[in-house]
Length: 167
Length: 253
Image (tube, rainbow over all chains, first blue to last red; front, side, top):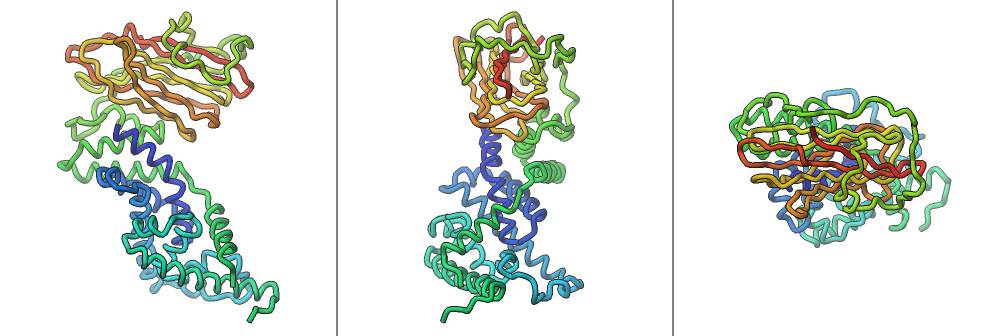
């Protein structure tokens, strides 16, 4: 029975776990790795996952932690590599297309809230369960994150199309 | 400054642009699970073996999968058990003379459910048109085994139902069914009908199976002393991409 339930969980959630990871870390192949690692963790804690009010949120929460650790590890490594130079801002890049780069500028919690609310359409309560924070914290991080992201993307849009920014 | 709706659209498009690689995710999850199992020999092995089996059931094929399925849950063995005793493995290989023998009178739509299975599978035809099948028994211990149905299809299938019917014998207890059907969603169930155990596997409507080989496992335990699979039967009803109704069936040796 457990096998079948885990199987079903995998089929139902591996896709969204990977997409979530992709938006959180911006790297397609590492996103699949994180989704796989989250599924491994889901199994290790299967009893708790199954007993959880929201098993999907449990898996997404695991993934969010893995994503944060991945980014921390990555930035530590970057300090010692030349990649930081390659990542320097390139003025001619159409920023409006670089959603991932804009997302990467958000602090972890804001990014997590914006992605879960806007891209995955979760309710504030579901996001709170996923991240283990209060609904109030979700509300404020989402609103700040959305504003910041909209500005980052909006600037790019304005630059490219030569629009006048509305006062 | 983007509006909320624009932001939503942009983020959704970005999420949709990513194409998760299901096979890669499965491969890594399986590998990690197996490594964990090796690392904690003395740990809760039963659970890990279960995880491996579950993942293997999804991933299909491969030595790891075979090991995991043969080992099953509850095994005390720290190392992979000896290869399963295959009582009879006959995925009929001989290509049939006529590539397509579909009878238009048996229009499918939906596979005719248990009635087909409970009726005598007519003359145990293991191959029909692009569909071949075989039944075998994998013994996984003194009181545990899997009855395995392997099908191979040369055409895409738009509907599929596999029924494995095990005659009631001493101490027969089901352990769930599982399957190796990569890339498609298959529902499985086990019911008891007139003293027999009946495992049903049904391809979700709307799903299509690509040409390939697929495996279905009826897992069970039985009383010590062995079990005679002589009265067990399987039946497969399918609809090919061209609309032909296909029915095959057979025994397990």
